[in-house]
Amino acid sequence: MNPFGVFHELQDYVGFGPADQAILRALHPGLAPDFPEVSELFYARILEYPPARAVLERGESSVGHLRHSLVAWMEGLFQGPWDENYVERRARIGRVHVRIGLPQHYMFGAMNLLRRELSARVSRLLAPESPEHFVAQNALSRMLDLELAIMLQTYREDLEAQKARTERMATFGQVVASIGHDLRNPLGVAESSVFLLEKRVGTDPGAKKHLQRIAEQIAVANGIVTSLLDLVRDRPMDPLPLALSEVVARAVDLVQRREGVKVDVRSLAGLRVLGDAAQLRQAFVNLVQNAVEACGETGSVTVEARMVDGKVEISVEDTGHGLDASVKARLFEPLITTKSKGVGLGLALVKRIAERHGGTIGHVTPPTQGARFILTLPGAPS
View 1 (cartoon, helix red, strand yellow):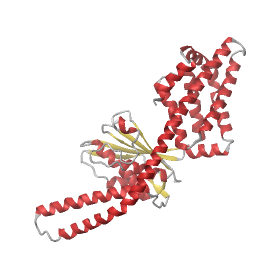
View 2 (tube, rainbow, N blue to C red; view 1 turned 135 degrees about the vertical axis):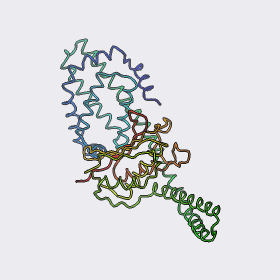
View 3 (cartoon, rainbow, N blue to C red; view 1 turned 90 degrees about the vertical axis):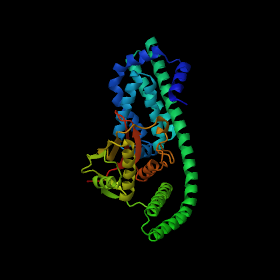
View 4 (cartoon, rainbow, N blue to C red; view 1 turned 90 degrees about the horizontal axis):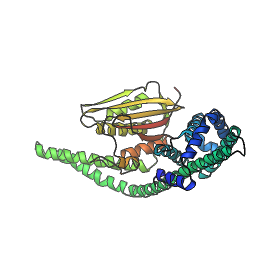
């Protein structure tokens, strides 16, 4: 269900309307100076509980960043505008909770803590028992109920989707594991036969051409089998401190591209990541190859990176036509592709490699046309 549809329905149900919005905006100047203190108290209380602290510190790079985000959240709570973009921003919170594995009951506790702190500060602004105090507390309570509803709805939908993906991947893995080895044998026989036939066809150009095409298609089939197996099995990792510029340079060298497509690598000097060189090189090959192909005959691909809270964010952006909206939500699932000759394994494998490294991969739409993928990896000391 569309989160905005849920929000609109609940607005009518709880009676949250323009008058409540005006009250919240009027409260903002008096409450805003307290937002940093509320945020400090909120996370101090949350971090008192070891399970909650473990989830937050594992899923987010910095509690300081979270405190800043909570202040921004309170700014939006009291200023709006309470439109579709507002709901989408709130829905992302539920998705983050699913991604980092935060149990749902923590959301109830967290919202109750915020409700208590903000309500206490409203009582300092307005005389208790006054009509203004009563309507202000009601407006705040309705808005917080709506906030919780948005997060819980998104949490439930994303958790169900995640479970469905896990089940599909388990079935997918069983099928791949059972047929991958069996496919290797006939492909190996075909490859050997092509090698022997090439020595026997003499100078017949037609025969040589067809044998070359057969060999190329065998290589393609072998590559698909390898990608499938890499996707479903846990390959041994040898994480080491790596110079990001060297890993990316080797990957770019392996990417095939047309003369009209330029690959610009920048801002990588001095950045180091902790990981397996072979697996990370494969991830960058897949990302850059996809970007190059998205450009068509002419265009450019930009690879750049920056250090953020102890992690390295690497973006790969192209000047192609962007991604079809119908596939954005399922980009990193296996067998999802927009290419006429693709099999939809490249991005799924990138996601698998990122997760093995304790990192993430995501997509954002850049201001101009095209697509931008952001791979986040653990940083290593320089």
